[in-house]
Image 1 (cartoon, rainbow, N blue to C red):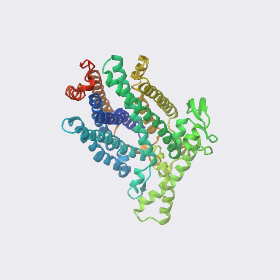
Image 2: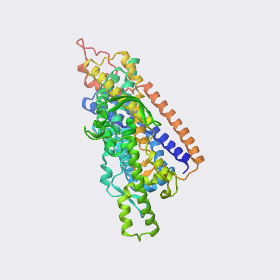
Image 3: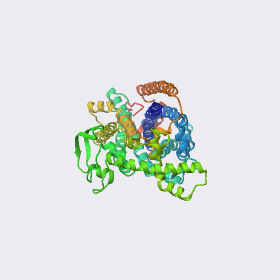
Image 4: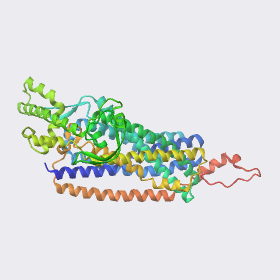
Length: 536
């Protein structure tokens, strides 16, 4: 196999996926924050809340459009760069993607249009329903994508058909209610809520530092800090659930995240700091917290978490078992349906390990001719690069706890200190705006890079999944995508900065109506109306 072709295909997909994921978290969270703000507007009828909905809704709309554009490109890549993957598992992977496109995407896109153009055509409650449908559509769209991705992490509800040489779905409900997919969904959307909360908090803090749009900024901070605190706490709780699922179904990923080379007595400690060394199979200068990893990975005090070295030995055993399945599969192919019963039984007994035999395709055309050294090399390939996993997880987790502290502080100041915020803390909020994107990208990296060398864990190696393209083809498309995405990024940042600098739209007519209704409450004792800005 051409290793450069595989690596370039992986690089291109990683580049487009990570870029697309810049838009997803903000879309998920900002849609819900806008819906909450409009709910308050309908309940109070105060113009400042309508103004907030329109302002943050505009920023959501810019982000939504760019997210759609980059998401469509990603789906085209499955047929372009990953044709064997699409052919092999398309029956399962394609179903949630199709549902996402037909239901969630069109639902979301339709209501986004009504959100922006229905202010004067819909009643307040009607427009509120539209806004909540936008939020639900955004999150519903993420559900189907993460069901597809969760199946790649933990393939259930499907079997390999030796006649068609494809994976075929046996239970849609097992795919739908896959515990890994469900945990990924709630963890990912919670991370999106944190991202949007930090964004709203940071932009509002910038307005306060500038002395502009004070009432809008204060109210936005109150909403963002309360919503963000709940979301940040849920990210930690749901992240623990993801860790437990990894301990059950992706033991190598968990061991790599921990830098755990040897199986340690239960309950295993958590390495808070260390320097993993893939050559010596040790983690140097390790600082460990007793029991913590065992509780996260197994939720018990007596169950062991296997180390990397033991998992490699298990992989070698599964490769040899997979070779038995592969030999039976070749008999299936040769006899074309007239297969002896004992061959069928042999295949069924070992079919769960067939994917491990495919790991040898990296070294030989026919896995049955592999040497012991090649089998050992394929077993070693099941170990992802440890140090990026180790540090990506810890930076992500550290940022997560930082978000909890930040949101707690601003929630306290907004709720119990009259929305008075020291200048230094406002500066921190502004500087922190990029942090949730860094955490989200690192989380996505841990999930995807930690699955290597598999496209579908234990079923289909990445090396087998690629299309038969030339290196030149890939280099040209990578250059094209990089150019296109750079232009999109410049447009996105330009529009976002433009509308943030411009600030919220002053809805003068709505403000006059509100002031006319409440004029008697605004008058002072001498009969004069005090100064009031449209936001007030």
